[in-house]
Image 1 (cartoon, rainbow, N blue to C red):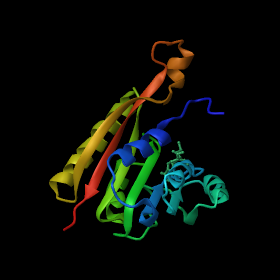
Image 2 (cartoon, protein in one colour):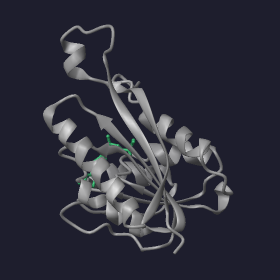
Image 3 (cartoon, rainbow, N blue to C red):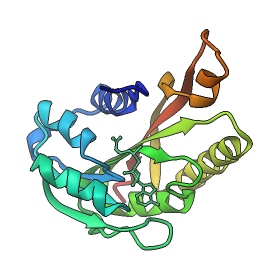
Image 4 (cartoon, rainbow, N blue to C red):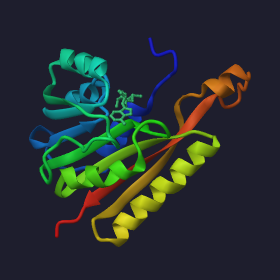
Length: 194
Ligand SMILES: C[S@@+](CC[C@H](N)C(=O)[O-])C[C@H]1O[C@@H](n2cnc3c(N)ncnc32)[C@H](O)[C@@H]1O
């Protein structure tokens, strides 16, 4: 049961697929903040086979291990520890459900780009929390994405808004029925070939 109607893994994987033309079975995927492995579970249905996962919670990694989909699973609290992944080797780097205040800080975005191979994709989704910290996070994230483009590290492929990231408990408890969801944004960047 998905009480919070957490839909963003499906939406982000669809978003990637709409813009990706490689052969899924050959693709090396780095699933950052992989949680219980939902993203890999969706991607494997689409023919992807090679996954490395990273998360800051050993409990989540234990759940992810039970899927049997990940070649490697690594524990790291990102922002305080470096991303434990080889640099320049991943065709696709995914980060779903973790770009929000208190989770993965914006400083980690550069490490995602570093892990991608030249020409590889970095696919991200952000929870559009309607709070001061949520707005600050958005401004800071989007400034970093743009700065990295100006530095020639990657190019912007596309961005898509979603109005159904998951149920927003604040709105839900306030009885807002017209729009009880938090919104979100998905971003796709392609690392420079250099
Ligand atoms: C909402 S879950 C998303 C999991 C998965 N990507 C999905 O969409 O189902 C957020 C995950 O981010 C992880 N996380 C949050 N902050 C983190 C950090 N600083 N470093 C590593 N993992 C973090 C949590 O442990 C949790 O597994």
